Length: 333
Image 1 (tube, rainbow, N blue to C red):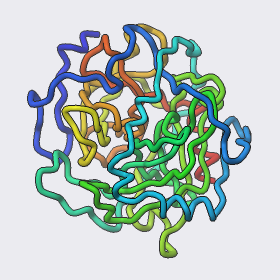
Image 2 (cartoon, rainbow, N blue to C red):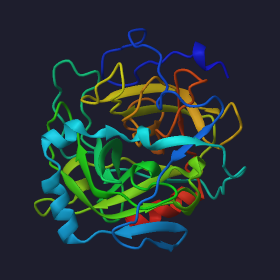
Image 3 (cartoon, rainbow, N blue to C red):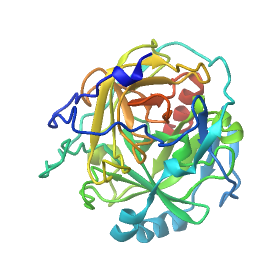
């Protein structure tokens, strides 16, 4: 794969920025050919339980309430991109479990986010940022509301809520349609966190998928408020995707939504089962959704996960197979 010759272009409604950005991998300087994972250790606030092929954490109402109060606009602005937690790692299972192809239709937003001046992409009501604390420091990632039985499920990357291996994040909140410090749909605190055992226990980047369940706000569910994307698992490899997120490292500032578009190809080093698409988004975009096809109306089928310093302008995302589907099922039930 000649990643350096790939061009990034916008799939959606925002103005094109092809050619204006400097080349940047999502995670910055990473050893050539090395896969990435979250490092460090932290004791979870509650003992995580492994069930139904997932590793999960429940969050008390008191903790959820305090998380909303904690995340002032100033703390959100100063939160660090979660990619700084990542380090080199070469461990990854050579095969992923693939089950029957599944697609679950989404629900359209009941409201539309209003466009703002100088934004590269118009805010999307169900796409936003997640803020969390790990090892005493505040971090930020991207995320997306997905269709679910509980109408309260958010998709993000595993390393955006769990150290892999290690403890879960605390003070985890989702801010849909975030832009330039505004939170037009409010701040939604997590009540449950779910990820794959391969990520939580071994830090295997192939399985870097996760889901959070959030509490209602003013008596309304997340889906009723912002809508929810459809989600798909066990699909064909090599599809074409539109990826979205809030990159914060140069040349971006993390304040506006950005996007990429392109056909997925396999990991050129064969170290993971993740796929890469042409993309120059940087740290902070981790956890942002990949939609099949062009724009935000397709089924979500991956998330922004990692990059290689030796593969320019390429974002890698995990294959949404049975293991990540198990985490989704545990969350949305």
